[in-house]
Length: 508
Image 1 (cartoon, rainbow, N blue to C red):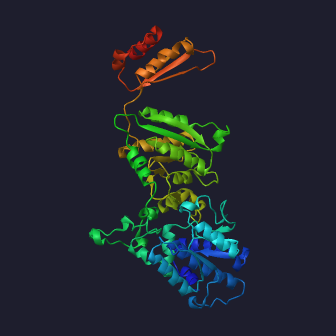
Image 2: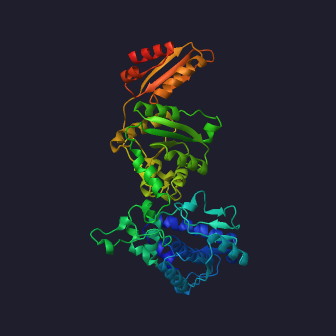
Image 3: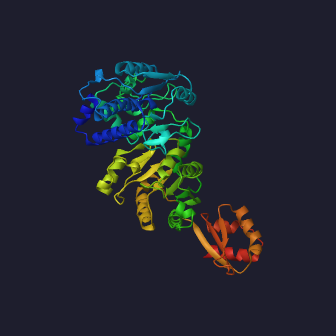
């Protein structure tokens, strides 16, 4: 089998590891299910093309292992036995259609063509031809891949079958390394600058591959395998949330003219909500932001669930200049923060080879990269904030900053790094807050009306009241950025005691 030989002869150790892991998943599935019980979903794209040839190699090696072949069969003599599903839609590229049918003819692939919507067509097909498992060319960066494993049951509301994902942990680079090493045919659109192909309505060549100097009307592009940053694979796919990303992303990191920049703080962790541990990072981060003149508009905690994180990030990213999120970052099953951020922005997770290199240097052999979920980052929107004080860069997705700190000391180091990076206008300091604490023996009812007048007449002054003990004195906090003299000249409050307190505050 030429595919297996090409990989064995390759010097690419990473590709060999990815290949052997994928073949293991395929052979495991073929051991669990009869060949009549499995199917393969093919769409003509690069990922499913990789999977087609992996399945050919995997089935061949499975036959050899069970003594059904001596291993001397060539590609041309080998018939592909796995039933293959192809969903043909009116919006598919003609080149994809042509490539699919030519590939099927070349390798003896029998296509079950479905021209209905995906779900209805699949239900009808599985009813007619009972199927227990379907091989899918899903990679961890795909929008539908969140929460999936190499073997994952179908979602609720769908026909029951096992989703088998042999290339779930493959990166963009791995896909092209396989196609080029094995010298197999792929759709010609990829040689025209397309890096991720959807429908004709939402797919254009990737501008990052544009050849400079070519005329606009006859713009030329380099092949897809020349894209240096696999995170930008889908840059040629239009996003429904693009307007949201523009208004809530790069533009929002700049403080609004004439207003106080705001930040939201989001902690991820069941331990905090269960009361098992006390959150120390949130209050510390509040103080740090306050010290440079930023206003924290909200601090909250959410469950360690992808949907919970996504909903809260989605809510806060449009209301704050920056969103800081911490907790739920790492290799554990409960570390879902990055996946939640990706879902909030409507993008997929994709392997980030640069970030993986940092992790490998930090963890050594414990971080092999074979299934390094920590290196899966939101595709197309991730910026790595590198600093000499940090062993691993911080993750920034538009106006959301993912902090990896687990204690105050680590937070201090990450904050210092962010402050060193403020020349990028990430955390530009503004005028400091002026604040005073006033103590009075008056009751809450006695101070309520005059404080309400202050709030109405001077909305730029933040007022608050609290008691340290149940019977202790009432402490009034007054805070703002407006000049004290200006406020004094404008105040008209009849309550003598509150006025006296204010005079003492501004005089001090």
